[in-house]
Image (tube, rainbow, N blue to C red; front, side):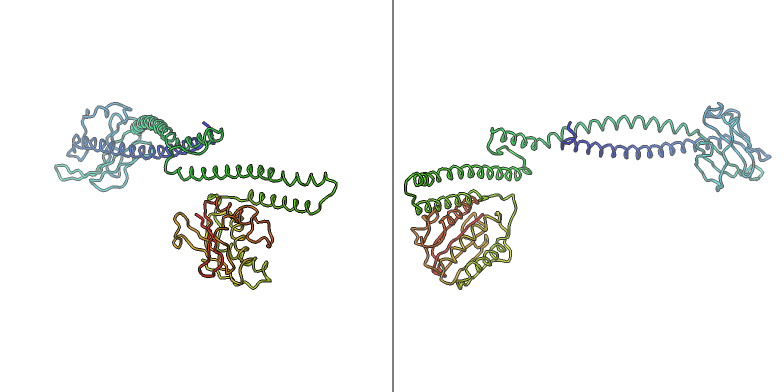
Length: 447
């Protein structure tokens, strides 16, 4: 498995988490089992203490007397691991079991009568001490400490066996869980592999878009990728068409120029007209090719700020004309649009309004709640108090090279570019008469 793959990273992460969990579980269970084993041993030693108490007798002289044979056979076997001692308080041992021959007795701590004390002595043995006050038939009291010890190896062996069994089970469960995790990851990441395969199919030309049945979380990604793919294809197609149109459009002017050069008399006016025509064609094609079109995944721009910048520029360009600008817009208005496209749209429309108006231009921005047109969330409305354009000529001025007034400067391509960019953005351009100013009104709807 590739170490850079997402599946490998998730599987390793899950393995580390499982291993850490099992280690902590093993530590906790081992400690719990050890404490349980020690508690069980303490109870067993307490039973042995009671057994010694039942077997012991106090003589008339106040001495402890023990039988030769005890109920527990391990007390009779030297080195059996179970030992017993009896010693008076503040005195040496007076009795020890045969199993404790040659061993040092465990020192009894300070304790109250009737109290049990369970501890691990300096020889590594678990010892239970019990202090008792014994009174003989003469009423004489003697204080004794009964001590029973068990080698710690007994508990250690139990814990080791438990650790071995626990480790085996945890290892088996860990391997099973890792296998399950691997299968779950393969199932969980299968939608990503599906979308990768579909992208590879698009790259090979077998598909045009991501059309698979994707999980909910990936539908937005698939939609954005489809938008990007469609946008790039539209750009490529537009570039190809632009080059083809440019080549085709230049044929006629070039042919005329060639004919003029080959003729005996060079007509300067013809050359000038054809050069102007070629300049017009090149400018239009370049502007059309530069239109970005719809790309919602590239981000947003502030349309309100863009209008402010355009108005400031128009005041400088038309400084010789006393234009009154009426602006109605919010302080901020974010839209999905390339900045260059927006400036191309709004700049051309406002510039035309400034050229045609008498003295007043009105610019408005409306939001989704103020728009009657369904499917749009932004409306840019530009009005002027000029003569306006006849309704039957509106479609003509959106064509390349057609101007509303042949006496004005320009190549007649501004409105054509505006219309094409709006169309690429999925919007709508409408023109009619302004009800408030009486001149032309242009409305730009964008989704």
